[in-house]
Image 1: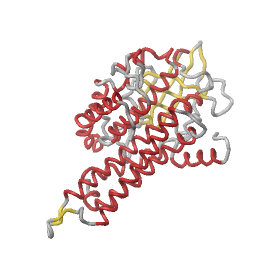
Image 2: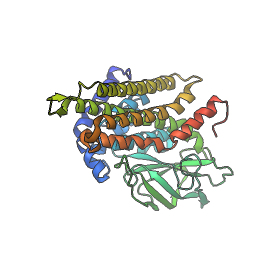
Image 3: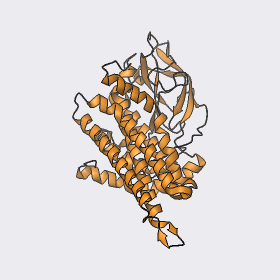
Image 4: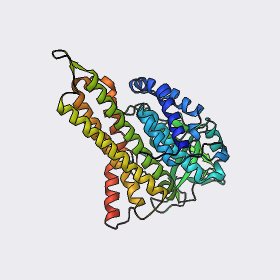
Length: 383
């Protein structure tokens, strides 16, 4: 359904092989222990997938967001925590590429599998209003000092680079932010809590504290006070499309897990599988249709991003809400179809049910997306 070229399909097939051999076998442990998927990330790094969207001139594979979405889909089918870690890396890399004159070293390191990136936008004070940080940089001796309490930072403590938002020193409005590159080894960067989530338990989405982190002008990824432009124009499309791909992957995994249940579980009194029961067959058919519909919508958004038009912004706003709500619905149906077996953890359906709910509350949340979409349809400003 992604309509990939032969080269793109080879890359996705490679990612599928990694997902089967090095990601899927660890998914239960990652979820059970709330463990960061070190083995999975290492396998992706070794195969060059941390450089998937980095140009070949900088050692990367030079692939588009379409390939990235297809790769995220197959990873999420095996482990959603790994998929979310990888998605946030692609978002961080997109910001690096927008300021490539300052991030060449980091981009080359990522292409070689030595640099994992992520975003650090959300703050406790602004909650899901990721575009309006409450922290503010201050200028001292020609450098800027960052002090912030960031919440829900995926890969916190594991990433090598963090794209951090904060109000510009001279900001007079809540949207006048600047984005900076903060590295793991910078003095004053600490993980200030642990992640104990209901779903996606392995993505280390923990709070981080920045205390007098000193950055020079070479670390500013956006122009002063223009961080919102990079958030919306660079990071958001990757996050929206990638989140949709992760959700579609979760839904696909739920479809396949439910089919396994219907075709393998047996009723001892009749020695028959559950598949002859028409009610259960109808449910899995509904799951299949809903998943296919969400994947088709995602591809319509990819088409529009590749050939932008008047509807592109609206489609980007829609795609995460549509796909994540589909994943919630599909996994809900999977739980009902699997009954007590699914409730008890059979086929990983219960894990998928929990994981599907995480992206719904990731900013911009589904409720925020609906508000943005409504504003756009009514001709109102989004912010």
